[in-house]
Length: 437
Image 1 (cartoon, rainbow, N blue to C red):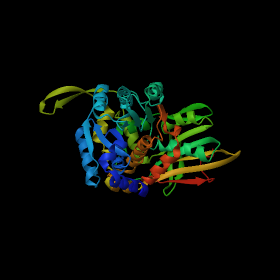
Image 2: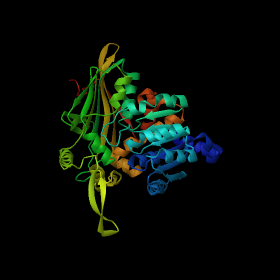
Image 3: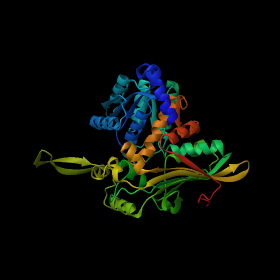
Image 4: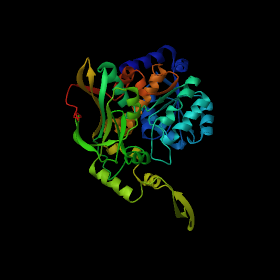
């Protein structure tokens, strides 16, 4: 951080911010939620790399509030705001042609990945996101839809960086770092994600409830011996010990980064993803499903008009979207959030013909994240890597025509940046990684 700050001060002293602004990144971020808030704070903290900055979302007032919060913390970066419907390619094209960003950071909903990628191609903008595409009418996600854009981005000379959050994101960079420095062959990979925090709510999700519940209630999926193995949702689980936290019940889930990791590291014999859930959370989840509130198909409902209760109108409601409206907003959880997250990769493989184990992880305290950005740790661990990926792009380190997952780039400079920017990581060598089955 000191080096970054010194560079920033030196630049301002020698040439003035206005003179060197043309050499800095021109970036447009879509989204104004918890992850976007963290990413925006981090961009505002690194004006040696980022110059012109715009935040756009479906509700401009949310963008304006975010900018006000950044300025209230003492960061004086000039940040523009705009309103846009990210479902509309036409609106996106109009906005991109007006602001002319070099890079678009997509922190909107996963449903909107493809419309934003289309607009980027139409306007000559590079692209970065944190989660892969999923159709709105089906709880299913995979990279095939976005990988299909590879040739178009190559021919346009544009870069698309996919899944640059923590998991997906840092988990893949951790794997690439292990492969680069410590293994000739990675054979077994277990990604472990623990949130040991307490937000003091009966039930709340740490990011968009609609996306979160769709993800958790899908069937489990893991990779073994060249095949994908499917399980019923949340039936495979085990106790896992997390640093500074202790044992937590961890559930096998389908998670998108495995799809790209087994493709880019073909020596992997088995890849799995595990996430912790408390029993109270799972009980609420079962009730939501049993009551039909997890449905994503529209139902018809007759409701009184807001301005005249004597009259009614028939409307269509998606139960899960209605549930999202009544659950606590993930952006409001940070103030009373205690505890920490722990996310990492536990790896077994060969180096010089001998088997070794390796564990690389980050722990993030919710209160530290809140004190810096007003958001809780889950948003922080996703927003910091999004900024770091954008920084890698503007420094020319992660920049080449095509569509790429983050493990296809050099992991070292990225990990250096996230360590400096609030996500220090740790390594353990040849210890019991608890996944020897």
